[in-house]
Image 1 (cartoon, helix red, strand yellow):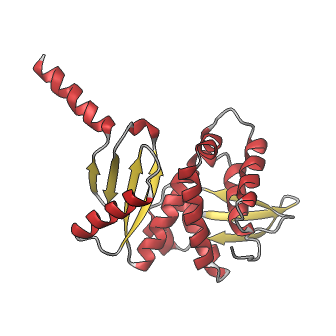
Image 2 (tube, rainbow, N blue to C red; image 1 turned 60 degrees about the horizontal axis):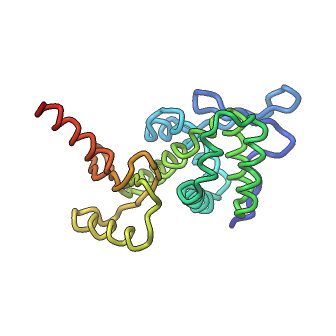
Length: 223
């Protein structure tokens, strides 16, 4: 992975503000700011995950490290999908914020993530937003796809997809007219089985959870 300069030097304290602003201070005094451009903010929607994603995109672009950061954020999404232990770490409200930050950064360092991405996750952890990391990763992928003119298919499954399932899914998307598509995967065990696929405003739901809900509604209607 890219051995790029740190997004935020180790001796400064980064803070994310709600106006899509990243500021860092030394000894309580502001020494610099990073503001995502208005166009980036608008294109990414404006939610919390979008603001974090927009700030990372703008800064990686400024560092001329965008391609490397994009690749690593894709790898981070895969790590979240494939590791149930890591997902539990992100979602747990019981772990102290400092312990959660140290644990998350230790995992990323062990997996070979570069300092810019580790520092970015460290900021998210310090701001008690680790639970939102999966959404931030997806928002970043959406922003990248939008900038590059690529359609994004958000696929949520009860279990991580295997290679054969990915191939079959991509083939079905191509048949449906989505040739230049970026597949973003997420795992939600509560779906029980099957998957949902969202492309823009269109949602294709084949999850077992949805099927059971429809069956339940049908039984109520017949009672």
